[in-house]
Length: 410
Image (cartoon, rainbow, N blue to C red):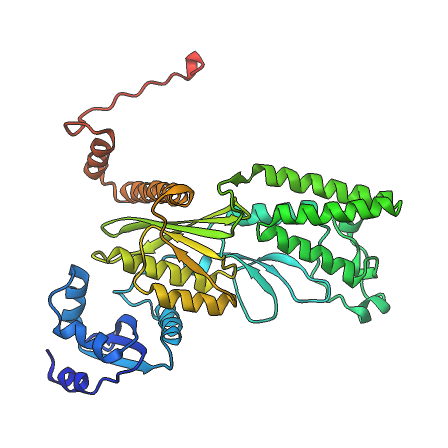
């Protein structure tokens, strides 16, 4: 061990905080957090040999820096931010996280709903991140088909309406917008519609249907049949969406399911979003592993990234194994959600089946990642070995025969 490190290790604080291990060139190799900095940092130098990754890291440490925090939760947040910013070599990271889009509902008097890749503190509501651009576009398309939300970028307010600053566009004439630019819909009614949009994006479709059915009945009783018919059409569209969402739980609790599959440096994370008992969203993340990470550490990193970016935090999160910082993660999520969030590692029953289903998806995703990797590298021997393993063949396949049966209506 370097002599300068020996002296620094003697003066470590017994407080929570974040530590950064540095190379001989001052480059950050690893960022970690600790309840007790003294015990945690010393463990890297005085403990028995660990896994391959830890041993490789230990050999390259020439210095370290500390940031003391008041609580372990503060340390966790700081650690997460530093990992995203610095991308240290020996930390688990998520690939291409900056490219994930969100659905943004602006905080304007007459809000807009659109996709964005930037999350800023401007009072707007953000939903995501969507790891699939296709699913995000499908959600926006659904919103535009059912709700008459404006698509223009005008700064619409009471003053602009009073001064006739803007004119109706084509969207109004084809019944895609209610014309807030000319004051044809009140701010109150427009924002009620935006609240309905938010309810649908959150996966609470059945909840909205019940509310709209009450409004439809009220409009009918008041002989406002045009309004009742308009609500009826919206309800029919929402019921069509709801019928396509798979029921996976009978207790109607909002929960996420997270499963990770990995092999060597290849890994995949699958996330199910379940709202009111229905599977309303599936997300897939690519984890950048260095090799030798413990499963608990991988889950820990995935959870910190996903809920550090994700604005919708459910009541329950189902996992296959317990992450390293379970209690701290719960405390952190409780603060973010402003209510209790519970981690569950189910052993049997319906919840265990959900975890198994999510794990099966993660394994499938992992195989796709490995296949793409093989195509890129032209690794035919590895591909044949994988085929032998998956098909349970005694020997490595030497020949593969293919038959085109398209000409016999195959």
